[in-house]
Every structure is written in structure tokens, then in C-alpha cells.
Image 1: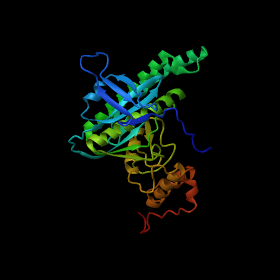
Image 2 (image 1 turned 90 degrees about the vertical axis):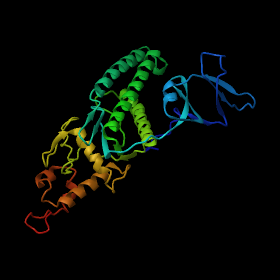
Image 3 (image 1 turned 90 degrees about the horizontal axis):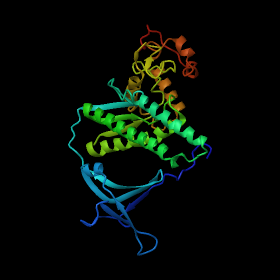
Image 4 (image 1 turned 180 degrees about the vertical axis):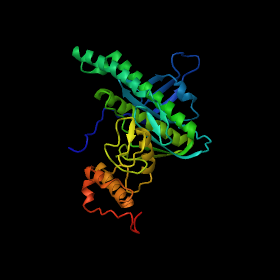
Amino acid sequence: MKKNRKPNFKRISMHLDEKVAVLTEKIPNKTKEFDYWLRLSTVNKGNPVYIPLKKNPHAESIDGEFMKFVQIIYQNNNLIIKRVKSLNSKQYIPQTQEISIDLGLNPLFATNKGDLFGRNFLKSLTEFDRKIQNRAKYLQGKGIKRLKTDKKYSELTNNLREFLKNEVNRVLNRIIKIYKPAKLVIEKLNFRSPELSRRMNRLIQNFGKRYIKEKLNRFKEIFGIEIIEVNPAYTSQECSSCEYIDKNNRKNTHYFECKSCGKKLNAQVNGAKNISKRSSLVDVKLYTPKKQVLKILVKQYLERLNGCNSAPMKLLSENSYFKEFLSSFKPLECGENKCL
């Protein structure tokens, strides 16, 4: 229990089939306020609960078939009831074999092709962060601990959710429209930024990851796109050109310059290129520990280049990542026949 988080049952939702939840149309000309009746069976036989529901225009417009299944969620003092819809697949002819995506928030996404999508995303999040933090401080000053009970605080967080959902949908739709990939490779999601408060990082981590996964699952279901999630360890520090790993390669969130080969490019684009390579690295699994990933990458780098094309020994000896392996590393002279 010291190594793993305890289970949290606060966000458990009910998934109900037609045995306990039956949705029926309203009686024509009887009411104008709602569109459906949801009948829920209870432990008291013969005493069901009836809940009136309105249509969701967006869900109704999506091409697919509603299943005899509902999901009930209690969220922010609201009872939310969702109908589950099986989406119809669409004709989709891939034009690109594979696109890799790096999540960075500033911008939102970068691709291995060099694109930067959602350039103002972090700027908008910072403004949300300022408003939410100010409201939270005001409420805490009033002695209010349960922030969700405040109408204005809930409105701000709801607006944040809508912004995240809209931006994720907009950007991912654009990537699919431009490249029409057969495969989409994405890093194991970590929706955080040191430029935001802990509260905001927690909010976007909860909401952002869910929206991205929902969108990717929809691509898979509708278009048949294969979604590959890879281990992102050291993709931000590894050079996508020569594969030298150094924490000093990445100058900041925007600029990458390799200390070995001198390659210069956008840091997120570099990360996206490494994510593309990582999908074919057999020894690195999605949940391989970070230290083990580093060991694999360093050993492969030294064994592959064997000294001739690797970083200078002085640079390697000053790099803490390589020190452990240099005692057994004997680089070949470039004049030898075995030199690569």
C-alpha cells in the first residue's frame, strides 16, 4: 500500500442494462418539458423509480444505434444519465501509414511530421487557472472547504471541461483529416505542466486524459485506426537523429539541441519523432520502469555506434546516464575493419 494508491470509490458510476433500466418515449402531446421516461427497478418489487429525461442533440445526431444500456453518474452535485450508442463504421482509406503525436500543452500536440497544433492552448489554460485559483482562495478565506458546492466555482470548472473537450476534438480531428493515418502512435498520457498550479494540473489530468482516450477510441471504432500507446520515458531528452540521450539536450519546453551531433529542432517535434521509433522498440513495454528504459537505450546506443560515430568520450564520461556502462565499453578505432 506504500507503493500503490488506495482505491477511490468516489467516481464509481452505474452501468445498467434493460433488466433494471428501461427507456421509453414520452406519450405524444402529453408533455413539452422532456422527451423520455427512464424506469429504474428498485429493491422494492413493483415500485420502480421514473426519471424524465431530455434528448442530447449531439448524441442523437451521431450515426449509430442506441443500445439498451444506460450509464448513471453523480458529478458535481448533478445526476447525469448517459445513453450508450454503438457507432457505425465509415468508409476510410488511409493515406499515411503512421502518425506519432507528442502531448506537451504548449502547444497541445506536435507530430513527427513537424506540425504544431493548439499553439494557444497553454495560454488559455493559464487564464482558466487564474480565475479558478482566485475563486478557490476567496472561498477558502470564507471557510468554505467543499469548493464544488459554490455555483461560480462549479461554473468555472465546467467551462474548463468544455474547453478541454472542444480543443481535444478539434485538434485530433484536424490531424486525422490532414494525414488519414492507418496507425496513430501516442505516448502514455501525462496531462501536466510546471507552469500551472497543482489544482489546475489535477483538473486537466482528470478531464484531459479521459477526453483524449474517448476520442481515440472513437477513431478506432469509426475508422478502424490502430491506436498504439508507448512508454514516453526519455523521449524528450533523446536526439531523434543520433539517439544520444542527455538531460542537457533539451534547453526548455520549446528548443532541443543535441550535445553530440548538434541537431536543432522544436523539442516537441523531436519527442514525437522518438515516440514513432519507440513503437518498434521491442524491449521497452508500456509499463517498463523508467530506470530500465534508460539502461536499454544507453546500452543500445553504445553497442550500435561502437565508438566511431558516438558522442566523444569526454562528453559520455560527463553524462551521468552513461557512467555506469563506460567501464565495460571499449570503443573501436575508426581504422579497424570492425568499425561501423
